[in-house]
Each structure stands twice: as structure tokens, then as C-alpha cells.
Length: 413
Image (cartoon, rainbow, N blue to C red; front, side):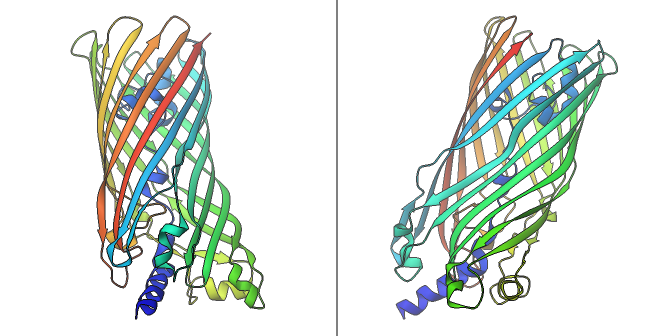
């Protein structure tokens, strides 16, 4: 009976584990250490290079040419418990480095142009197969995921007046997904890559020195990821163990609005509401070049490897503050709530989708030519209890905590 129940659980994993992409993985929650420290409530302020992501209209505030470097490190700490199988596991310690590189320059008094290279998405996790072998009839498997999107954003901003600014970017996206996991026939591995184009539009209005507000809209785009899929068990069949797989999905639109208020010359308070149309992402099917593979693992096959997401639309609520100790030094802090788009039945330990409460803090230094910003974010994912029953991707109690330190350096010419 115990062997049968373990095989049943493996079958459940085969159907549901390949949820694959998480909302918190697709949207990294921002870029730039200044905005990181202020909880990502930056659409209505947008006064450094990271405006290329948050609100490109804010780039029009730049008075000097500048070069910026940004780096962040996502450090996940996941937990997974399933009492009936004696499992109480922790994820393997890992670091997911997120880079950024930007150059912007004014053209006259009205235009600012430039380009920003960065990673708006990055996530993943790794688990020791020995800790989870009770799920797979005593055999250890690889449990590892890594998702990343790298974006090149040529940008332009125009200052209509001191009170009205507009901006836009063309976003050229390169995505990659690596996944190692067990399924009904044994080990399953994907290594997919692909390109897609999108864009961001922004508006910034500053009716007074004390108040500003902004709007930002990211266009949806369709990405096609193609690469190798490996199933060692296919060595026992007439088919190859490696075939070319392709997944196609539409990244949904993102819309945000924000305000910035300066009650005193030293204090700035910001707040954002950001909406993502995740409901557009319900299922991400996979097709294979080999007809035999496609019949087994493609749409409508007995081992269909489609990503069943069943997501809903979500909001993020963000708040931030900056207090200037002097002309050179500033302290910053923030908070934001990041909703979970996925239902309980699609949760899994490789890229889980939690409801996060984030606490952020940091500082900044600036001189006439140099700006240095640092931030630390701590994300507390609400534990998810997935019942041990058919239709659940990953039964058990899932938990997650995230530390994200970040740092950027800007040189003004």
C-alpha cells in the first residue's frame, strides 16, 4: 500500500509539478537600489536611471549624462514538509545574481535618450533529492529550477514643460528556463531559450515642487522558448532521449500609478498601486519536434507536460520614504504587498507562488559626480498548505523567505 501511495504521488507530480513559472519569478519587483529601498514605490518619483523600468517619463529629469551599474542577489530560503512521508526539507542555499547597466544623456533641454540592460525577472530553487526520495519510491532525483529574463531597453523621454513629461522604451527580451524534476517516467529536464519584443510607456506630472504623480504601462508580449528536453527513460523506446521542445506564452500587460509627496525639504513619501493581468496565463503547452515525443508529452498526450497555471489578476501595493540627512546622505525605507496569482492546486517547490509581505531599507550617497545607493529587501511568503489529494501539484506545507541585497553606482559626466 505504501509503494502504491508513493507511485500515486509521483503520478500527481507528473500532472501538476511543471507549473514552472511563478508570478514572483516573472516580475522581479523592480530594479535600482534606490527604488528597492523605497519598496518599489517609484512610479511617481522616477528620478534616477531605474525610471527606464518604472516610468520612462522620469528620465526627462536628468540634467547630465550618466553611466550606472546595478547588481542584486536573490537569496531564497524555502521549506517543504509532508508529514505522511516523513519529509521536512529545506532548499539548497543558492544565489541568483541580477545585473543592470545603463547610460543616459540629455539632447538639448527637452530630450533624454539612452539604453538600460537589466534583468526584470530572475528566480529559481534547488532541493536535495535525498531529502525528497520518499516521494519517488526511494530514488533520488534532481529538483532544480532557474528562470531569467534579460532586457535591453533603448529609451527616450521628452519634457513637454517643467510640469509634464512623457517617455517610452522598446524592450528587447531574452528569456531562459531551466527545469529538472521527476515525473511519471523518471527524470525530466528542460533547457529553453527565446527572444521577444515589448515596450513601456510613461507619464510624469509635477504640478508643484511638493507633489508629483505618474502612470506607467508595459505592453503584453508573446515569447517563444525553444531548446532541449531530456528524458533518460526514452532510451527504453525507439525514440531519442533528447528532443527539441517549444513553449509559447503571452506575458500580460502591467499598469501602475504612483504619487510622490514632499511635506518638507528633507522628507519624500511615495505610494504606488500596480496591476498585472495574470489571468491571461492559464496554460502554457509544449510541443516537440519528434512525432513520437509529441504524441506522448505534447498536447493531449498521456504525459502532457503543459504548464497548468490557472492564474488570476493581481495587485501590488507599495509605500516608500526617503529622509535626507544632508545634501549628500539619505536614509530610505519601504513596504509592499505582493499578491499570489496562483491557486493552491498549482503550487510546487521549484517555483512556488506565495503572497509576500516585503520590508525594505537602504541608504544613498551623492556628490556632484558620484551616486551610490544600497538596499536590503526581506520577503516573507505566507505558508501554503496543499492537501494530499488528486489534482494537487505538490501536496504538503510550502514556505519561503527571500533576502535581496542590492547596490548601484552612478557616475555623472
